Amino acid sequence: MSSLVEIETAIKQLPENEIRQLATWIQTYLDEAWDRQIEVDLKSGKLNNLIAKAEADIAANNVRDLDEVLNDT
Image (cartoon, rainbow, N blue to C red; front, side):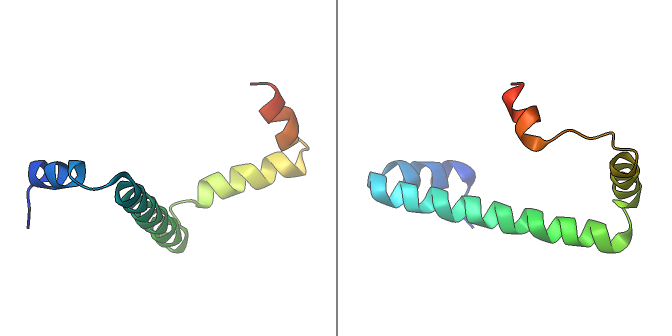
């Protein structure tokens, strides 16, 4: 296995289009890892308290429309 420094050096030698392809691949890899972790956390019950809080907020109408939240920034 190459060291991180070796990988960084190799990346710097790639053409820009290949660096962009690599960046896309890395982002996809990280996104899929995130999805797998969420699935594990859901199955283990780790997110149950957060889900219950969200459901309670929805039932109490203690929520805001996403567009409203985004426009506040």
